[in-house]
Length: 115
Image 1 (cartoon, rainbow, N blue to C red):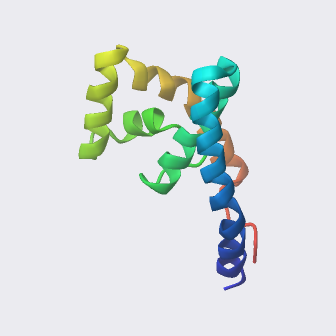
Image 2 (image 1 turned 30 degrees about the vertical axis):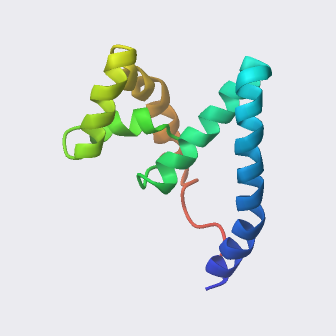
């Protein structure tokens, strides 16, 4: 129960900041430094993977789609769609991110922190 309360209070702070971050990301994406925009898009990608696709917070949608392509329809769609823009994008994303996923799972960093 403490974890749920802490999560709710944290989200009361994080969600407004996330909305502000999205607005800033749009501005920076058109007028700012490419590096800053790329970092923001990467963070948003990881957020969407965790919140929408029930994936790991430290993994992109593309990498998750590659892992799940054999048993999830949404994953096959993501792989197909990204192949239209960059061939083997999801496979390469997974190859780059899988060692991080393995390390986090091995070290137990995905486990509950508030008890």
